[in-house]
Image 1 (cartoon, rainbow, N blue to C red):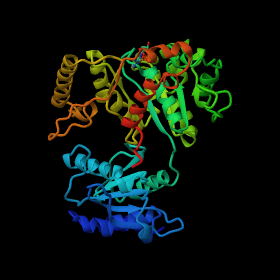
Image 2: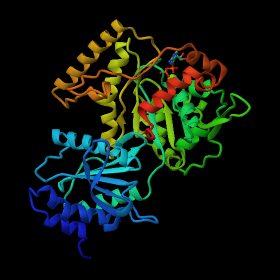
Image 3: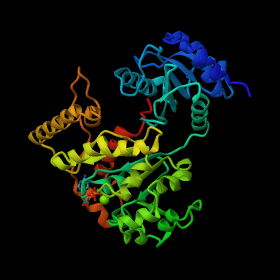
Amino acid sequence: MGFSKIWQALTILPCGAPEPIVSSVFISELLKTLGFDITETIPGFPTGGGCNAVDYAVRKNSDDIFIKTKLNPYLLVEVKSREINLHPKSAQYNSTVNQLKRYLLAPNCKSAQWGIISNGDYIQLFRKHGKVIHPASPCLEITPDNIDKIVLAIKQKIDEPQKALTVAVYNNKGGVGKTTTTVNLAAILTMLGKRTLIVDFDPNQKDLTNSLGVKSKEDSLYSWLVNKSSPTSDGLINVCQFSPNPKRLWQFDIIASDEKLQNLQEEDLRKSINYDRLRQVLEPFKFKYDYILIDSPPNWRFFSQSAVNAADVVLIPTKHNSIFSLENAATVIEHFIPEIQNQRMDGGPIALPIFYNGETITDPGKRIAEQAIEEIIERAKKKKVNPIDLTSYFYPKFTPATKNLHIFDIPSYAHIAGAAFSRVPAVYKNKIACEYYLALSKEYFLQSEV
Ligand SMILES: Nc1ncnc2c1ncn2[C@@H]1O[C@H](COP(=O)(O)OP(=O)(O)O)[C@@H](O)[C@H]1O
Ligand SMILES: [Mg+2]
């Protein structure tokens, strides 16, 4: 068996190769190996909106030639010289990732679903879903021994993309609005035409199942998790239908909780069900739905670990006036998510920036929260082991120039609290609640149309 072309390209790539050499020797061969030919590849693609050009944009030709239309790229590639350090702990890695993210969100790249960064020493694949960009592989060091395997894995992902973004709603603190967020986010995404599945993975509370008046089918989720057979949706999925007026019918799907799971002790659970099982059983649904939202309990035990492990991203509701909810959010980002990342080895999951939920915020209250957050950020930066800059998780709009401390907020609103009693999401009953969650979906998930 001969060596592959990408293997050959890598072995002749000089140490310290400048960017044009990395591009012409390695990246052009990479794109061919991924299945894109020269008429499907545009170098120096203008991303629009004041952003610079990305090194490559590629797309499979349909009935036109991509080179001619220069529209709707599928994959962007940002190339660096071998002199640039793309080790994931380096500053240059961070700035390259941020550069790729800007390009993926730029006006001419709305259609892009994938991004790659590489300097010929390292390579990483990112996925874009709406406005969420998350790693689809770790940042891998490339060697002649692993290059074929790495490129094949990338090719498989981009050839058969999953449809869904899977979101775990989690904070290691109770009563912050996890269940309320799950229900209302599902409701608004449904209104916006997104096919949505929610999963009640908090069987001790069963709030999600109860708040929608769903009768859980005994034993279904449990046996699904325990049995290794591949799941069918029969008997597992309930449909939630809401008709706020005769002309409207909204419906989303739910995997309800299950009595049998409720009665098991942690030790027995772990004996009979691997925490990776939820991830496995949700796999087929990831090709069917636009969003899968998983509600989880507050503690870091079997159910939350399973939920975070099954997710692409973690959405963390907090309360500005609860130091514990802020501290717990930091713990999730600093410790729990990396713990799962180390097991999964595909670069995920990642945390989305926190948001405040369910309290009225006064200026002095906001100031106190900012002080607490500053202390949390400073402490995390100064840690001896694995120091981390949490700024972007608390203040996603912060730059040294703007010093913007904006944190998204769903205010306290009686109609939101009351809706659970009527078994209908607040979003479907009340215009203001609908606006709040529309704003949440736009802030975190949806790409703007213009
Ligand atoms: N934005 C809000 N405005 C008013 N009440 C809220 C809001 N969000 C949540 N709540 C109420 O707060 C309580 C806790 O919310 P819940 O979603 O059950 O939290 P968790 O799932 O994190 O334990 C519930 O009674 C819920 O109705
Ligand atoms: Mg809950």
